[in-house]
Amino acid sequence: MQDQQHTVLSCFLSQLEPKKAHEAMKESSWVEAMQEELLQFKLQDVWDLVDLPKGHRAIGTKWIFRNKRDERGIVIRNKTRLVAQGYTQEEGIDYEEVFAPVARIEEIKLFLACASYMNFKVYQMDVKSAFLYGSIEEEVYVCQPPGFENPSYPNRVYKLKKALYGLHQAPRAWYDTLSSYLLENGFERGVIDKTLFIKRKKKDILLVQIYVDDIIFGSTRDKMCKEFEELMHQRFKMSSMGELTFFLGLQVQQKSDGIFICQSKYVQDILTKFGFSDSKPASTPMETHKQITTDLEGEDMDVHHYRSMIGSLMYLTASRPDIMFPVCVCARFQVRPKQSHFQAVKRIFRYLKGKPRLGLWYPHDSPFDLIAYSDSDLGGANLDRKSTSGGCQFLGARLVSWQCKKQTTMSTSTTEVEYIAAASC
Image 1: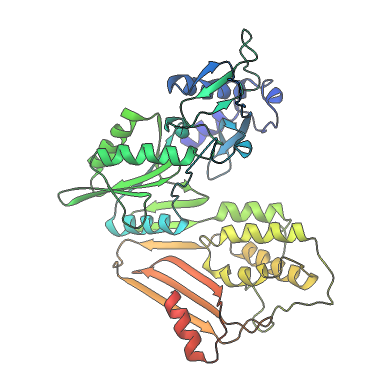
Image 2: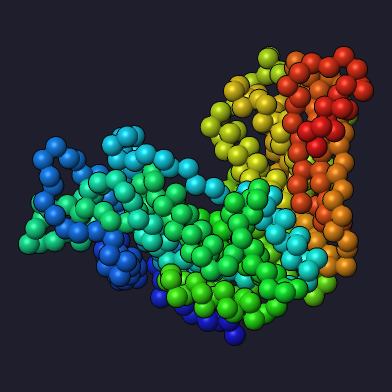
């Protein structure tokens, strides 16, 4: 029934993303989305329409149009965002400190590993126009939104009270607002991971992970999850998205006996993008008895196309440790890629064609002991004779992180390279 509802809903949404505001104004669904965005500005008291003071300049604004899709690729929402052209800001005038912590993909996998071990459901929430909740101290002026200029005062500008998407200080302002609110309501901030917030009540625990304006959370007691949702709705405009199924490109399947993480949709997308949908599958991601060399005499390949393929594969290594090493090896030749390097990358795509649904399985019935493995090769890099370190970390039977990197120093013995690899692991 839910699938049918999403299919019917997509019929009333625009399937194309306009590039300019005047193109979006022709589609009622995009106009409604733009009006919804400006309504949030009014509700949050983001700005005031004023004359531009002498000696100040206004930062331009731009509409960004995106189709929000589910894990199957169906359009479920036309989303617009009014952003400031922050690249014109000047440090010391328009902004000061800008740093804000962001969760790493390994921290998301650690969160899911905890959920599988403690056997609780993970839920997802989205903050509507999150950056608009962050107050700014600097005096910043922006131009009126394209297509929504005030006819009575077309030459006026907006003076910002709250942070706007695109401003350098916006992420920091939002993080300060959210973290202060959670700390005031009984949460503890992670000692190492500053985007993790924890609340304990007797023997129960509530975990909350923040990734900018996306929030995932879970608890050993369902009541604590409901209380958290109510707490967030009291302060912010939130969209409750139910159980976590899709996050940062990761497809998450929560089952009674564990959690499965994969990127099969992304695999299909890049296979289609680079023309490997009908290619012959390969049994391994790289040839096992043939090294990739500089190949100075080989035919030059398109640098931009090669780098695009490598970048797409790098993102896939978030859930596919089986391609980590060959991708890292091929990435070393991005300056002047040759035909032989291109063939090696093509083999990785052909391997993905044959095994698109591989992923990570986090079983519920496994212990939670930290186990790490490391390995290395002595002088394995044929270009500079440096060694390569490899490592992976488990929580019980749950693989949460892995690494593959050339060592920065030259080693003279197998023992030395093993010590370096073990230390980095």
